Image (cartoon, rainbow over the protein chains, first blue to last red):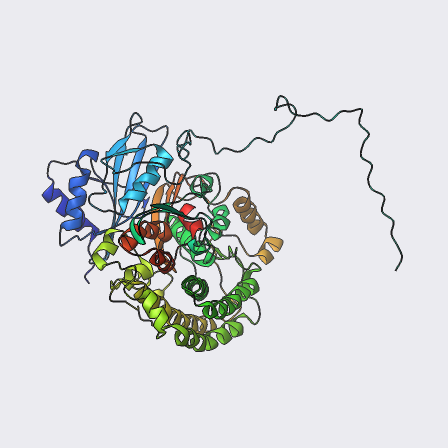
Length: 188
Length: 389
């Protein structure tokens, strides 16, 4: 098992897709090798990464959405790929606009993407076109909103008091106060 | 016929619902429905510091709290660019391997119980109880450990801890023999597991399987060997691999892992003894990220300031992102952090093995008998706390 240098992945992709804008994410604390790929070429690139014998990214480990509000483009979808044969990891990223965020589904490339994409849809409202059954997965079907978006509040249930709950039963002040029960202690 | 299994079914190992389309006794299609235990941990993490998220992880795979703590801490350490001292790493290895033993014990006990072998359950829970007592000894909690922290551990080892672990490690191989005596050649066990819920290697990889499920299908892949963390490359152990990818092979892999984990734990104890025994370096002395020792806080002004700063608002990681995975008892458990430079993560993503493995359930049981559904669910070893997060 020979380890695969991450630069080699980028090189292979550039040779295969010379017209696609593939950009490496830079930054001091970007600890994993991350490539930005155009959303419309994602499926092609994913298929190549999976099938190329030198790359062999047969396993899709995870998919995550990220909301960068107020940045434009607002959303990113991150794909964590793992090559068992070459013992390498690479992250693919696509950026999406705030209006109608949509990205082609990779369920045809990696069947495991099914639930990951549903989860991302559930949390962010990102649409994966071509997904066989894009429905909510962790939240109830009738949930309104996309909870992991940054403009969605953490949420809590308001405690019901008389001042914020109209029609709440108010105890009649004329009623006698409940006196504490008298307890008699016995000496043992 | 459509049959609803769960959400309250004793063999679904939590609050799992599976909608089964049946033709007689044959499963035509299965649809797992999840989310009953969803608590929004990923959302909550965005409102907490990295350290405050550690207790959350205890509640994910509640059978393996230490592994979850470790995954979060390693991801945060990768983001910060720091590494815990060697002795702390050895203690982490010891505790996570004990965790693997206890998690596999629970798995084996409940899996056998589902299929009808009741005795194994009592045997396994006896050993699990010992591991829980070891947890209690080291950090005071039996299940919600939160013992592993960013940069090291919450506190140093208590007196008598290593002897206690050594005793457990010495006894464990004998107990594994007991389990194997009850099951490995038991004709009923063989009939219920051999050839049941098969997952060929290619399909397992396509479905994203990791850990014992992938190894049961014959793929030798263990993050401890392939992408070592916590100095795992310095330990001597074998990665057990199955052949056919059926429930029996997954059983074999996990039982052999019980033996291997015992071996690793023994080596970790020796390492800890070489590195100072029960007293020594247990967390990094970089007080920008890690709390200074309590004795110093009481005597040094600077230590007090560091303590106050970290407790009051947490540490500041650089702007960036990091993903780190560990070989948890159930498979690849990873944390993905996106940091915007503030003490709270901008995004925390949990890659949990149970979530991915549960997706493979329909592929395992399509065209098989209803009774095999129970075996399949048991053999992939899911914890719903981790599926739903």
